[in-house]
Amino acid sequence: MKQGTWREKLEYFWMYYKIPFLTVVFLFAVAAYFIYAKAAEKEPAFSAILLDIHTDVQEEALEEEFVEYAGIDTGKYEVQISTSLLFSDASSGGYAMASLARVYTQIGTEELDVCMMLGEDFAEYAEADSFLDLREVFTEEELEQFPGLYRDENGRVLGVYGDGLEKIEEIKGYSGETPKGIAGVLYNTKHPETAKQFLEYLLEGEG
Image 1 (spheres, helix red, strand yellow):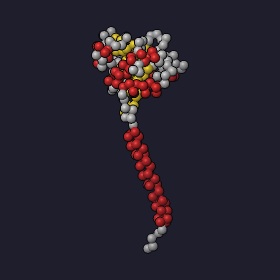
Image 2 (cartoon, rainbow, N blue to C red):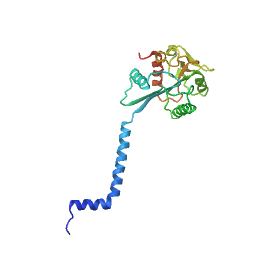
Image 3 (cartoon, helix red, strand yellow):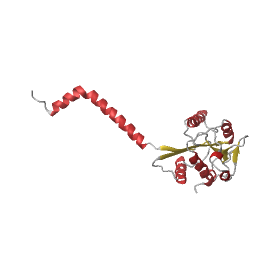
Image 4 (tube, rainbow, N blue to C red):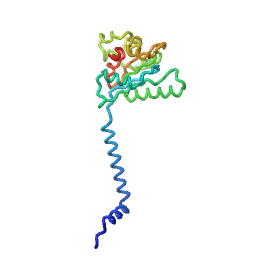
């Protein structure tokens, strides 16, 4: 029996095996994409939210500055510092609710390491045991560096006041706000040492 030409063979293959062939190609492409995405994915190194902070400084600028301060390898690790979320003074209730949902989500998924918010809000979260006792990551001597410490009725040190923190004053954060902002480390942080570095960064500025 005479063998068909190369073109005839190709047409035969395409007619009878087109769908299985395309399915295999599609699955291979999807697998390759997920392998590439996984390889390119950076491990989270730190995440902070500064709520109701009124500053013109871009989030990217703070992230780059803190990365340099803490010596974090951005080729492997990712840092996120959010300054655009609002609980109060939001132009619409919807935005405040979206901000609240994001904070709750990041706390629940253990993605958030440090949160800074106005005093009244901080007190509510502190009462719900949302913050770590800073004596677990700082020594007593190290805590003495901070101009003001937030303590609960049991004497736990749950936060540091924004007043007197070099970086907060530099970016004019919480200017004119009463009560002032307070920063704390979340109780379920996965990066306590980096959270400690961030509070020191807020205290010392760029350094």
